[in-house]
Length: 165
Image (cartoon, rainbow, N blue to C red):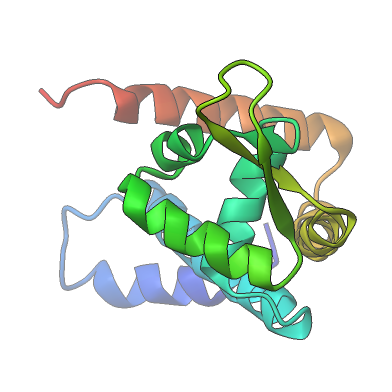
């Protein structure tokens, strides 16, 4: 392999200091951390360009994931938030015209939250911006390599989901 990145230099710097350092583990973890930071910053730039706050995007995303309509209690659960906090978020999104409240079809005492066309467009714009950077990065790999990377990361995630030894 001839291409070297800043992580290779990081590992080389630390190996003499930490002789038990596994360069493959350190390299993989450091690259995952770098890519996580890079994608978070790309998301933030996209949201700023769309005049959308992170918590607004997160709420629109949770709502879109439920087909564009949900009860506030479902959103609270999806966002791991207190219901009162979701109410404040929904109020702000209503003021921006991204969602509106409508009577529930299943319980007339309840009010659901529904994406408006404007909210749908804002969410799609953010998704397009995020997706473009994700595709740009992973275009460095052939399709079968992307599949292999996804499969390998799945194994690591499954291990992370297990209690530690």
